[in-house]
Amino acid sequence: MINLTEQAGAAVRAAMERSGKTAGGLRVMVETGGCAGFKYLIGLDSEPREDDAVVEAGGVRVFLDPESQPLLTGMTIGFVESLEGSGFTFDNPNAGARCGCGKSFC
Image (cartoon, rainbow, N blue to C red; front, side):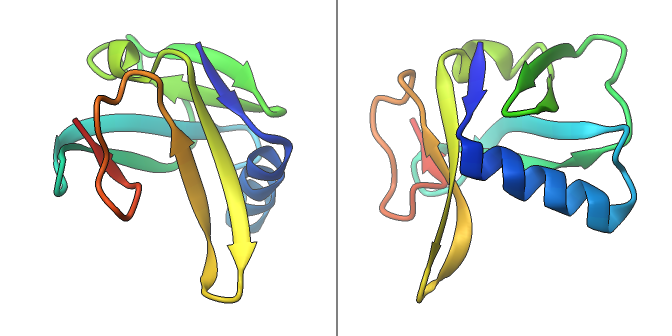
């Protein structure tokens, strides 16, 4: 359903340890907004919600709400570090187009 690269999984696990949410997981959502129509929202969550799909990816649990699932199926989340900074990347086969920053899509 969704994949995390090795680097993304390591970044999430490190963030979970720093925040003390080691039993939780990564919440990935889509909401209307951004420069291309939809934007990704990610964050740590202590537990899944009742209607979430829970997927094991990259060594962490990923929580997906039912509205976001169709837009995220097959997506790979990566993590890059460079001189300009670090952050997550999104390779989404469901995106028809995406903005220049890579954080929103349509």
